[in-house]
Image (cartoon, rainbow, N blue to C red; front, side, top):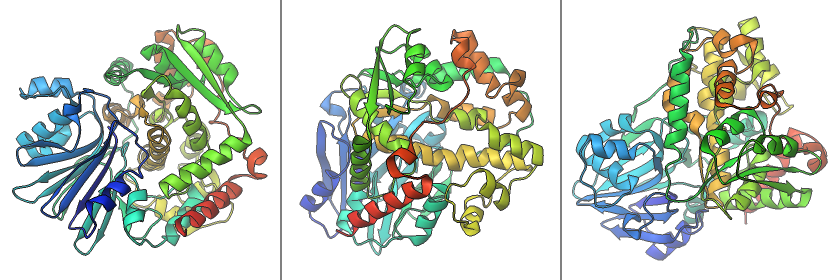
Length: 504
């Protein structure tokens, strides 16, 4: 699925709204489908993944109910059978709408997927909105007076309205690479919170994580859930490929998927091509390397900032975008390893320090997590406020699993959907997140190894021991080579480019 733009009580014409919708990144076969009457307008750019027939285009109507939906419900076949839904299409969109009509907001507990959707009841004039548990799919909200806008991106809101820069969000970005909670870079726009639904003025949390990292978890249960998470994300009526850096996370996903193509990206001077090729040698498909130079990287960065009307969080977002442009030649869906380090505490340096010091406060985060060199304790205090958990380690685990991961998920969604490619993230299956929420530090370091449980599962699946034992490295971008400095220079470049763009 793709981009949604829903407007209520607007002063704009259909032409204004269609032009704003077409600003979005998603170039599917139906980029102008809309319904407008009675004070509301719903538009959708479809990237057809399940049921390619135009009958499943959106907005999708059943009786008085109309839905626009961004994402995938992976267990839609099971839900259709379980609730005996009489469907006229083969789409997950119809399953979702019929399930909502049958169960109301209780349907959200049944969904395994990534989603942001809006349902309008033409008879009662009620608007129901929901977003997936961990925020894999974005949803922005603008509300001023009687005008209400829900959008997959900020760009159309920026085109239709006048927005004010949120300077506190800029400070968050300079210190921690992202904004937190519902903050965006504009005062008038909020990010609809993950794990919530809203009906009218009532907004309700339907899912939360309550970490208690003190248990030894059944490894067989983790393996079973992980295998099922990957299996569900294979469901597609279009080809599915995989990123393959040669690290543990992407290698085990590629092995289980067994795609026709895998992809690695990097600079000529700084890359993982050797490791990607090694991992690919154990698979049967084609492995494609995507080399990038400084000029291509800067062009991609400017293009993304211009299209999104937001600064980029991390430099490798531009590399993901350039790799995914190449992915699109063969595949419309790709598996990605986001969430593995949050799930299994692969950030060993910071988790080990927290475990040893039993400390997780502003000073700790300023030392071990923050990025900008200028100290901003107010921002760090804000980012780690109200963390649940009885111990420092529980609070740190929650921070990474919920708040830190949310920024990474925005990165992968932005860079892939811009190319009309859907990224699926099996490690962010909510069942795995809930199960591992109670896993102890010792269990996550099973057999004395970082991400020990995943390494054990990978070994059982036949992943090469050389890859399993490979030292962890981040997604490499040579900032010094590109900008002549580190994160401060990256932030400054993004903010200047962004401000120049929004002030045009």
